Amino acid sequence: METMKAMVLGRCAPIETRPLKLKSIQVPQAKKKGDLMIEIEACGVCRSNLHMIEGDWKHLGSPSALPVVPGHEVVGVVRKAGSAGKAKVGDRVGITPLASSCLKCDYCSAGSEHLCESAEITGESVQGGYAEYISVNEQFVTPIPDSIDSEHAAPLFCPGITAYKAVKASEPAAGRSVGIFGVGGVGHFAIQLAKLEGSRVVGISRTKKHLDLAKKLGADNVVTYQESTEQFVKSLKRQEGLLDSAIVFAPSEQAIDAAVQSVKKGGLVVVAVVGNIPNFLAFDEKTIRGTVIGSRQDMADLVGIAGSLKVVIETHPLTEANEVLTRLKKSEVEARAVLVP
Image 1 (cartoon, helix red, strand yellow):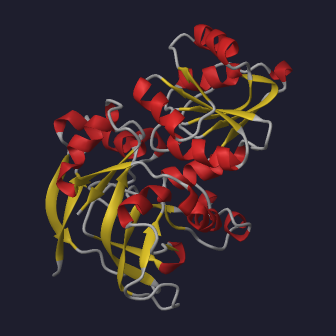
Image 2 (cartoon, rainbow, N blue to C red):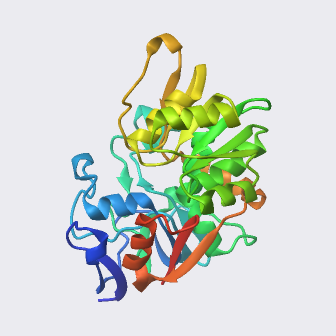
């Protein structure tokens, strides 16, 4: 039996207790026709990994079973190919959180397979990328051009696609302003993508480090987030004025509320996190829209423009997953941390 090293979650617990354990487990085998065997070169570390590990999302069915290997933004090299010729041995490919879908339902037929009721989620319902190898169906990988190294490509496959879909949902256009609530792994992509669409971009964060990053990546203005929604909106009005749209990447109900209050009447708020909407006045004619990752076509489109994006990363050995997630919890990661086996 072939074995590999992996960081395995046996039970949900605070990340400070180091719940991920380095173990030697069986290399995942191709179970279905068309499955690939991929040797992992890089896996990004996502805040949703942290929520799953700490048990915040048990009510959402995540993780669906334990033990599990987390990690859902994966880049690696094909070592065993599938049957349809979508990827051959030696190809470098990426995997998003969408590990598979039925490819038959109305959602899949309409090109929205990420909404499929039968979707499998990488690192949650199937084994993920905090490991040396992974198996996935060839229909759900995206080729990566030689111009992007694996460490910088990995974040495209969750924060990148999440930002891409959310920016599109915000209806960006020249002359329209958009506020990005949360300038981190996802937000640093969204700033750049919204600028590519011609929007006026306002970066919003609690920390100077992330506000400075927003400026560096092209934000037209930055505003410091405050816990008091009333005080924050006053500050925003003074420094920028109300926004045409807002996108929320900060995992906070207060941030969602602040975003709703920050847009003009008739404005649009895109919520790309798990959270309730505490206050909503229908008479303001505002639109609130949810979004989650994206389709395979969205992913291919994003990779096609990736050369125009600056991917801000820091790399760490796979064995440091607990420490990296602890830093992420404390907002000490500038943009995206990437684990390398």
